[in-house]
Length: 212
Image (cartoon, rainbow, N blue to C red; front, side, top):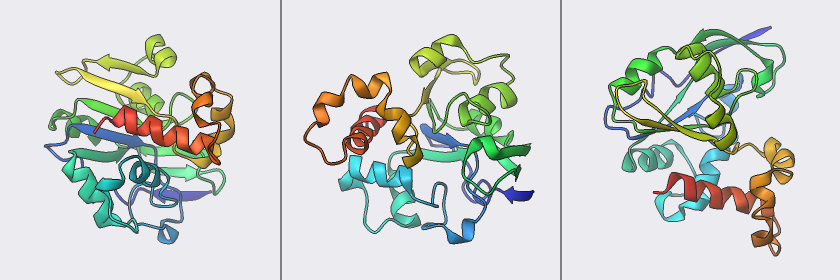
């Protein structure tokens, strides 16, 4: 089994003035092949979506400076739940991870920031970001039913209200499942003339939920 060590947690800790936080699991193993040496830089999926949702906010082509300038301007930080893991297979799937060391420092970094909203890029399945954060890091016994149902809720674990949001996955591999989901089917009529309806739905969804 290969062991992956997170390359970005120490380089990009949560900033004290951050108000929003994007939380994932850990990047794929072959980070030296990434399009951009940054969180989600292997395929830039979330940054491509956000750059289309807020085109005036990014300079192209996407690079670390373009992304971090956007994040700093809007007081957004990015972090992960896993510092080190084994991989059963060399994939980017959370189910293939065996966490060896969790990013427990995320708790103190959130406390020492101004974060009032967290966006998880994966939800409640094996090794997903939200599950690891609540169950393995914060010590919840189970995922609250409200969060499972609504994909949003407010917690008070950090001395102030913090809204949790479980995002529609930015990954292209999620598109098949999304095409059958209630949230997409309820909005499908808006994209009948689009050559890429699911992707355009994601762009509109990210624009609305980040509400910049």
